[in-house]
Length: 394
Ligand code: SF4
Ligand code: SF4
Image (cartoon, rainbow, N blue to C red; front, side, top):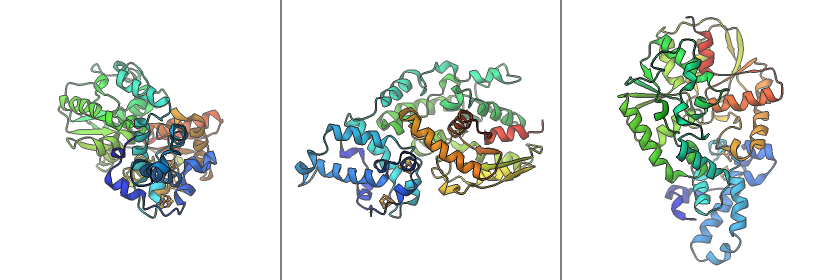
C-alpha cells in the first residue's frame, strides 16, 4: 500500500467530504445490493483512515484495525462498483470520486488485497492482448459474416481513418452486429477506413478499472504505433470506454471521435440517405460517453434525423442516466449484482412505453439485451449504429 497511488488533488479532496450521503442515494450498486458499504461516503471514510494509518501521529491507533482481513473485505466492496460516475456527478463538494475509486483499486492491488478476477484480467490482456483470452489473430473474424466481405477484409495497408473495434465487439456474437453495421455505414458514406486486425490490443481500460494502472503504458505504446503504421490521422470508436481511454490516457497524436460524433456529419451533408423506421425509442446514455465524455447531444441528433422515429426520454437521462450494470468490470467480479442493476434499468426503460432502447455502447447492449432475453421481456435493444444501418437507403 502506498500514498503515491493517489494524486495530490485526490489526497486533498478526500478531506472535503461533508457526509451528505447523496452519493449513496444515487448509487445503483447500493440500491441493488441494499448495502451501504458499497457507497462512496463509506469508501472515503475508509480512505481517510488509511491515510492516517500510513502517516502522522495517530499511525499506530489506525494500523491495527486496518489489517489484511479488513482490507480484503473492503476491497470486495470497492470492486462491486460499475464506475458509472453518478456519485461524482451529484457530489456537492466536487470530489473527483471516479479517479479516487481507480486509485483505491490500484492501492488494493499494491496492498495484495484484491479479488482473484483481477489476476485473470491481467493474464488475459498481457498474454492474448484482449480481455477474453481469445486468439488475437481472430479479432476481425466478424468481417467474414458481412454480406459481401472485401478481399482485403477491411484491413488495409493505409487509410485516413482507423476504426478501433474494441474487445467486446470483436468477440461477442451479441455485439458483433455493431462493427458489421458500422462498416456498412462507412461504405455507404465512402469513408476511407481500415481495421487494425490482430495489431489492435485491448485499449487498457479494463486494466485501469482493475487497479493495474501502472501496466497500461505498454499497451498504449503498442496501439499508437499500430495506428501510425496505417498513416491514419483519425481514430473512430463505437466503444465509449475505448474512446475515453484514448482521450484521457493516450498522447494526443490523432483526431479522436466517438462514432456518434463522426457520422452526424454524413447525415447532415446528405451523404447517408435514410428510410422510415416507424419505432418509438428511448435512449440510454452510456456512462463513459455521457458523464465520462459529456456527449449527450450527438446520439440524440442522429436518432431525430431518422424518419419515423419518436424519441421518448427516460425519467433519468443525460447526466442523471442510470447505469446498465455493465461497467467497471462488475460483470466479471459480481455477475449477480450486475444483473440486478440491469433489471432496474430495464424497468425504467419499459416505463417509457418505448418498443426499442437505443444506446451507443456494446457493453450496454450486451447487458440490457442479456437481461431482456433471460427474462423474456419484449424489448428491442440496439446500438445506435445498428439503428442507422437498418435505416440506410442503399
Ligand atoms: S461510480 Fe457508480 S456504482 Fe460506483 S460508487 Fe459511484 S455511483 Fe456507485
Ligand atoms: S456526495 Fe460527496 S460530499 Fe456527499 S457524502 Fe458523497 S462524497 Fe461526501
